Length: 200
Image (cartoon, rainbow, N blue to C red; front, side):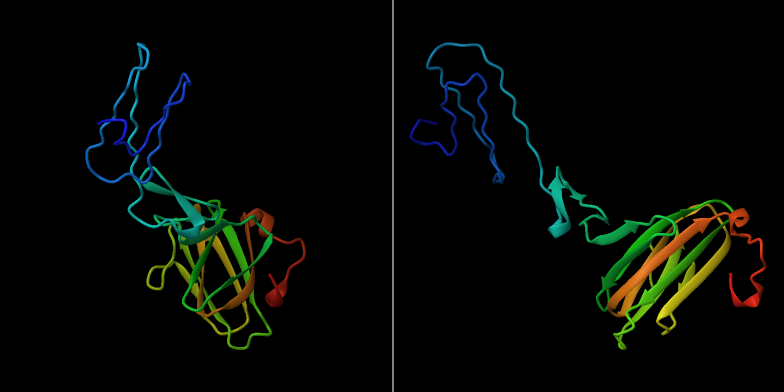
């Protein structure tokens, strides 16, 4: 190695010198130190490895694994999974063939009440709702399902096991929707006036 055969260099007079090579080709890298004046020194080399998958637009590579921006998760940050606040309505959309997930915690013996309203102006829209405890639901792996073609999906599930329930919205034919989920105990679910068969 000589001064005319270098790929990277730091020849400043600073106390701490640093060189960052990214991306670095595989192979043996030689580091040469030239003492213009004699001096004691300490050298540190840090080798970091990239990710084996593309983290896409919803995350970035952080030492071999993808770090995802909320609410995305998964090995490649491709899974949309939003935490829901009980009783609060969120607005979103799915493409045809796409999944989006929403999660909410339910206490032991509690109630999960869910309302999903599809876009009334889109007559071709058809969304299905899947629910699973402590895992992402799929077409063949779920605990509860509503796959009707009506525009408003209402689900009232009682005596639930304590778990984080994942609500999967699948675009059989995609479109926009609003979603509201409430989690409460049976005591808070009881009403002073009886609701008869026409309400809950």
